[in-house]
Image (cartoon, rainbow, N blue to C red; front, side, top):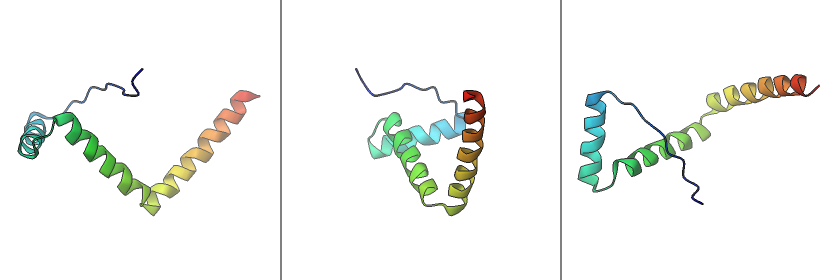
Length: 71
């Protein structure tokens, strides 16, 4: 079984046209362009100290909720 999840993405028409144009010039499918953009965004977040601090606070808050639910 594949480890791929299908998702629907809604973009403004002008942004979709730009994505399609760039993918066409790069000779890659739009889906690869989007995956590459997402990979770059995730990599940037992993290096972002402020994001990591917000992520840590979110993890702590969610752990508190999960612990209360498990009682």
